[in-house]
View 1 (cartoon, rainbow, N blue to C red):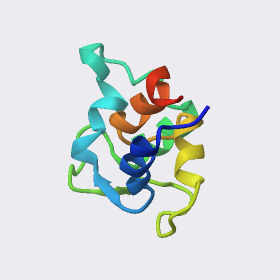
View 2: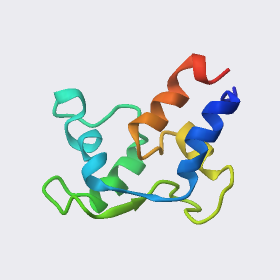
View 3: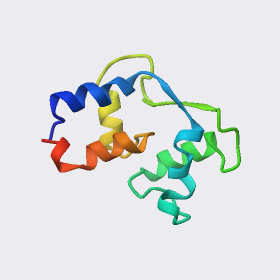
View 4: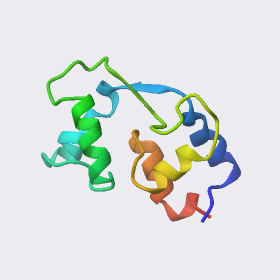
Amino acid sequence: MTFTLATTYWAGAHTIGQADCLFFRYRLYNFTATGNADPSLNQAFLAQLQSLCPRNGDGSRRVALDKDSQFKFDVSFFKNVRDGNGVLESDQRLWGDPSTRR
């Protein structure tokens, strides 16, 4: 299973960088207005993110997009997304969509 070339470049850029809790906190506490976390998130990673981004915490707190090697452009980001450790919903959706995994 591989990403298309364009998708690889787009998502691969997230191997370096950070995101504010404000932009993904909904995935941790109220995904799709259900009051539950995003089921595509790995449960251990969910707990890590919840500790970094409490429900009513500082939305400007930054979290690495690649939990294993945030300062290197490598394959770690793709492995994280594959394993349910994607911070951003857009990255996780690209991995989960069969049309972008071909």
